[in-house]
Length: 263
Image (cartoon, rainbow, N blue to C red; front, side, top):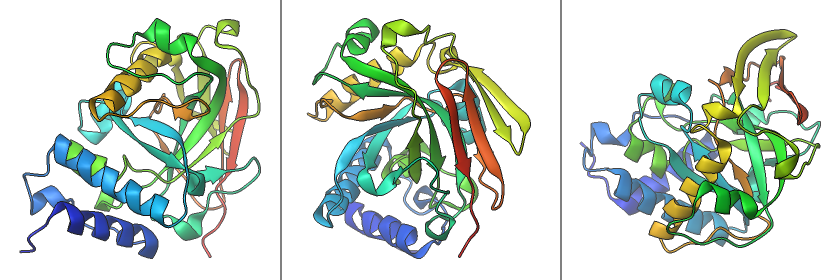
């Protein structure tokens, strides 16, 4: 049995990502990989991403909806990193050639106007620091076989990061009811999931405040200009090659991803 360390897990996860291969979760061999350890490994993989030239664009929250928690068997929300290497532009297909088993989920997205630092930040304070709200879609991917992991495993894996697309409609937070903002997830014209902003911790601003306060525990502030993906509103759908997935928001417009074909 391999003896894992924080450094070797970071190396293996980035290698799995680069080589498009999955593996069993580390906690099968290293049960001590808990939440705190997962966050330290996540910080190390981020350090290596930045060292190779990537830049932070913001943060992403994972498992903020009950639907996602129940599906993944993890009962707490997670915070992880976004970089410019993960950005998809409108019209750009899902990069099947770079991902293992991509899945798509709808997101309410905040773009920060102000720097915000916890602890103790409330949802109201967090929302007051937001410049604009957009619809979005995250393409999640996992280096763990069949998306099977514990909280520590998935934190080490940057909360199943893959890619993300931010929609073109930008609104002031006061211009819509975020809790009531509805979305349909449509695959090739067929609606397969519906959700509202209330499915994200009761209100997306609660997820934002949670992220700010979680970062504060690690001595990090939420910076102005950062993009914040507040977490999948519904269960994810497979990014099956050749299909088109539309996240149709009631107010924030359509976010459309062509799933492309593997190279």
